[in-house]
Image 1 (cartoon, rainbow, N blue to C red):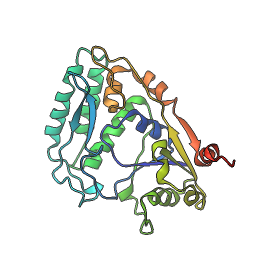
Image 2: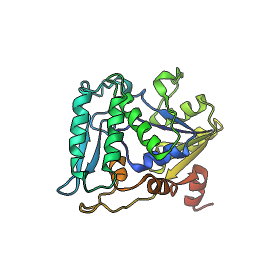
Image 3: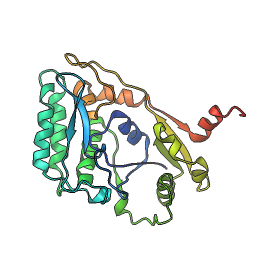
Image 4: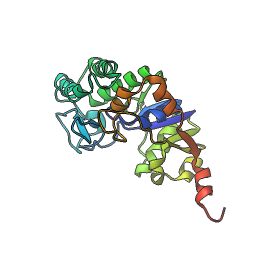
Length: 249
């Protein structure tokens, strides 16, 4: 079983969904300290005058003194209207604007409380359903795992993966430096990294901006095209990466 573990981000970029797509089990990592002004309550979409614009979900308790699971949305209805307003310039220009607006509406409408984690999980679920990606997340804080032995940032993933009985752990390749291959191998887990290549697409009359929220990707591309882009992501074992960079190998 291959496990992927990530914090609950707000409509994250395309590579996040490539990771979900390649994972057998997805864990929403919500047990550590919340960090304000991160991808958890905001993301970027195209700005009509050029470059990009923030779409943000204001919180009533944005502070590094709380855990991620404790973050609460200030005004869900107001946040939805704000996000919708930031997407209005896509209408009559982006071919899939109506479908994406419906997707965003579903993410906000299906939330039963003011939990930021719940909102972000709903957003992930809406996107995965739209792209036909299997998504049955496990919420870390609800699993009852004993993680008291974790002593450093790179230790959470092997501890969680081991507790779930995984034999593979998949992480974005950009986080490679955080982990020790030995720490995983001692638990019988293969450490793997996913490399998602850049995906460039037509955004006329606007100028293309790389790395924006999945919202922007879906505005301009039908689901089959996005799925094809996801399929180009590659998975490499940490052991193979180490051998490729070790001059003594």
